[in-house]
Every structure is written in C-alpha cells, then in structure tokens.
Image 1 (cartoon, rainbow, N blue to C red):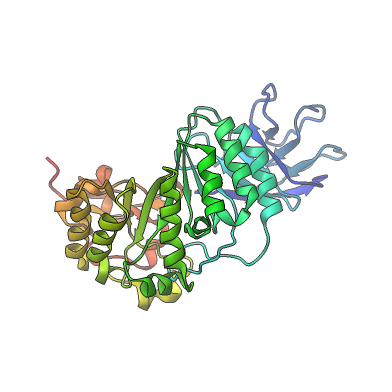
Image 2: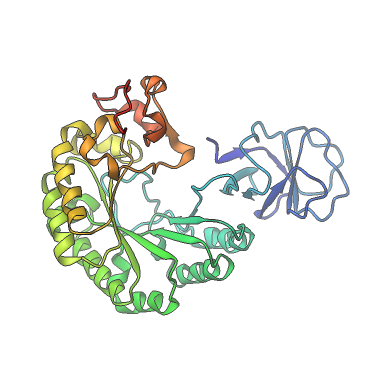
Length: 379
C-alpha cells in the first residue's frame, strides 16, 4: 500500500499540511482534481492533480501525479516543496502513527527502520503540530514511533500535550526504548501530565544486561531501560514490554519472562513479536534468523508462564501454521495493514481470517512450516 507519491510542484515554497478532498465544496485544506484544475478556489491551500498544469496558473499545485488512488476523503497529508506527498493519517485505517524522529540512541541488530543521524526535529515537529489538530476526534488509536521519540526533548512533551488536548478519547501507544526515563526529571514530567490514555511500549530483550546491550548495540542500555521502567511505574504510567523473537533472544526467553514477573510485575502487557525481515535484519540474518517453528517450545513456556501469573501477554507478527496450537489464543492480528500480506499457500487456508498474516518483507525469508489448514482447528 502506498503512503507516498510524487508529482511536479509549482509555486510550492513551503511544506503544506492538510486534509484532502475530492469535493470543491468541502472545508478541507487540499483539493484533489483530475485534468481540470479550478483557478479560483482560494480557500484551498494547494491543488493536487493527476493532470497537466494549465498555463498560466498562479496557485500552489502539484500536477502530473501518477498515483493518487491510495488517498481517501479526509486523509491528512504533507505536501513537500519537491512535490513529494506523504500520507500522515488515513481515515479508513486503524493503523495510524506519527513518526516523531528518525534519530535513535540505540542501533538494534534487527531494527526495521534504521536510524538516521540527522536533526529532523524542526521538520517533523512542524508537520505534527499542524496535523494533530486535524485528526478526527473519533480516532480510536494512534501510534507514536521513531527512531526514539524522546530525543525530541521538550518537543516530545509538547506534541503529547497537543494529542491529549485535541484527541482526549484516543488511545495512544508510544514506542520508546525507555532509556530517557532513567533520568527522574524526564519521567516526572511525563507523570505530571496524567495522560491516562497513553501506553509506552518498551523493549527488553534479555534478563542479562550484556545480552540486551549487545542486541541494541548500546552499552548501559539495559540498566537505563530498567531504571526508566521503575521511574515510570512510580507515576503509574501504563507500560508494555516488547520482546522481538530471534536467535539472540530465544535461548533466555523463559528466564526473561521470569525476570519480568519478579521484577516488573506492574507492566500492563507483554508482547512477543515475530521478526520483520527489513532494515538491519537482512544484514544480520545469520545472527538473527531462527525458523519460528523451531522455537515453539521456548515461546510456549515463556508466554504461558506470564499468563499463568496473571500478566496479560500477546503474540504479534506470527502465523497460526508456524505457532503451536496451545498458544493460538495469544496470537493477535498486529501487522499494519499497509505492509500486511498473505502468501499463495494462504488462499486456500480455512483459518486465513483468524491468522495475522505476514510482513510484506517475508517474501525473502520465510518459515519452512507455512501451509494451508484444510480443517478449522479452532472449533
């Protein structure tokens, strides 16, 4: 699924954020047309067109856009000066997120979106501070991701405050490595917001500090993350632990579950997550890849251990055919719709609708156990 397209810009001297519409009578900010570009609709910030720019035309526009079918009425986009149009929010999706920054203070072996060492704070803050007030009030859930969102510093809290004000009924899930919260001033500031609809998803990859630090490629990360979790717990911040399943985490998986229960019993949720074959993963595949069918026993022990002790647990990014049936109850449809696919074998599977499917990147690395079910084993 497209989240970006590009046309030929004309008169676009600054980035423009707004809701798109196909209706000239709409109160949206950005009008999409075909070959006939209206000249006198001054209330629109910019015109987007699949056709050729008329001459003369004195209003900002992006024309000759090859693909625009992925945009729906009310979607929020940012139009850049080079003609690139990025989708920020899709009205017909439950998988919306805000990318706060591409910078990160970790460098995880399996990072699906490798960090970029450039200061994008001004650019992304400008975009999100304009887009958040435009998001529909009935938005059910909104994700925050990076990079590491907390690297925005004060602007991290500023954007959270905007979300809290403009989207008071929206569940907000923020992915963070948690290291910034090791400093009490940072965790105290979040606690003072009393943001009850916010949950932080924080990765913890091992009960052994050196193993966690190796996986995230950052010395001292384990101690900072655990201290951050404790600092956040003092303020009753809702917390989720995330564990990516691969060759480095599987051997100590049960020990990690025990560590979480004994030392972090205040967490609201633990997510065991299948590996995404993207970003750094292909480059570190020998250090990471283990066929999901080969770690079924370890996963079953770890997830049932937590569940038996009352800690809410889920399995993300997994397929039913590669997962022991004993833990199907924990499997969730978690892969974002814009990168969720099924393989050819899946088309005849009677459990396809119950299965979470695959990452689009799985076409280059996949389990040997993928097969269609001919009998509904859930009945």
